[in-house]
Amino acid sequence: MISREEYFSKRDPSAFPLWQKATVGIAGAGGLGSNIAFSLARAGIGTLIIADYDIVTLENLNRQQYTIAQIGKLKVEALAENIQSFNPFINLVLHPVKITPANFNAIFGTADLLLEALDEAEQKEMLISCWTSNYPNKHLIVASGLAGYGKNESIHTEHYGFLHLVGDMKSELNAEISPVATRVAVVANMQANLALELLAETKGM
Image 1: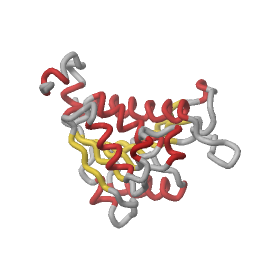
Image 2: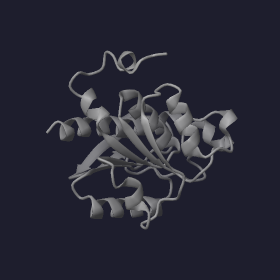
Image 3: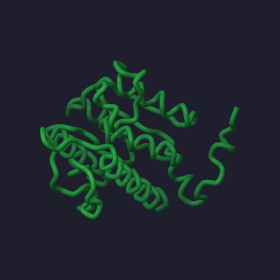
Image 4: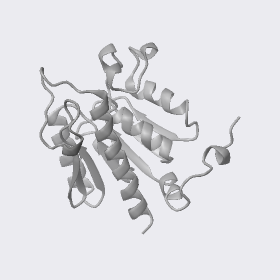
């Protein structure tokens, strides 16, 4: 059995203790959300709150952190299973529900920071509105434009106070442009990387 001390050895001595104390919300457990969760769990975030009502399907496997054996399972439960296989010391708070204005605060109210990883534009708008109105002084990291592949140079981050947008800011998913694992993971990891940076700054104040 690996001890907690052994598992977390050789981590950043200044940032890691701050990440361990952090609670991070992830809205969505698909291509963005599952990749974000994997990276933050590996980095050492203490608590992840993950909300998604969907189940794993075959078509998810080209870009999401699930396996064939998990098809039909709730995404939040399958994701927790996969995360705990490499980090048994993380605290996972799972909400297998659709995020609405009515349950938003109950789900994410304890989060220090929120990452948006939703598919539908209306859901994104609702989430941004709920977070910025209820928690105007907490950071929100939103994905904007990740369809297709290649064009690394077009992916960037824009900052608007406590709201941060990551992506190319223009490419939308449609019947002709599908999500590809490489570009989805790039945006997801840029979101996760920014979250680590912001947490190190705010928690260290």
